[in-house]
View 1 (spheres, rainbow, N blue to C red):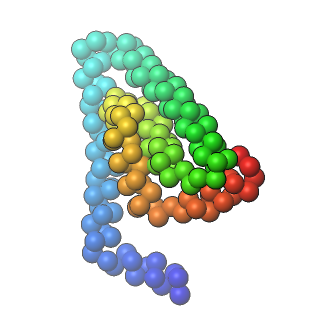
View 2: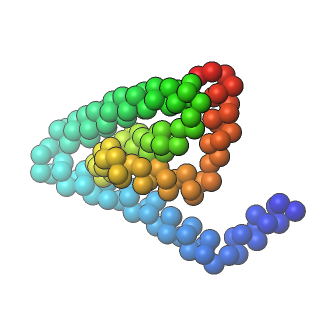
Length: 149
């Protein structure tokens, strides 16, 4: 029965529209990255462009790891106090999205990843991801509380 619901979902017009928009974005982002790398390669040199892309990604990942570790400590403190860490889950979700963007090579994704270090943007995206995925952090909270993290 679940398989039938899965296939019926593909006939839904809004689902198909969202899927096509996602596919369009998925194909346009790499094209923008390639165009920008070629353009910068002509302007400042190929090797410098590649080194710059690698350095921005590396610096961004270091920022993401630092932010992730800092917020993980805050999450553990809230769990030890017996308080549900809603904001920490949202912040960690935003930092995780920033890390994924920064790990992807290119300047556009690095820019988007660095924008996620702005707290307002990060919390907005974190709330959106949690709402869209319908993540149940209460189960995770109970698990973490059980094992005394």
